[in-house]
Image (cartoon, rainbow, N blue to C red; front, side):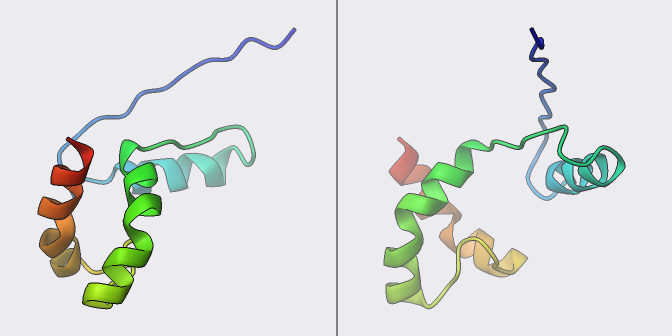
Length: 77
């Protein structure tokens, strides 16, 4: 039986958590999965934010992330 191991990465916004995962995934293809709390929030809010603000919550700029962050935080609460 394969044992599942977890690596938890935390940090402030825009400090390379996703970049770290991308590099890890390049070094060890298909060995790791990524989960971020914001992923489910982005999925829930995608259509609303796209329709109201024309922002793609998955592929947006830093400035756009800052603009939608209060909405995401409020929704998460």
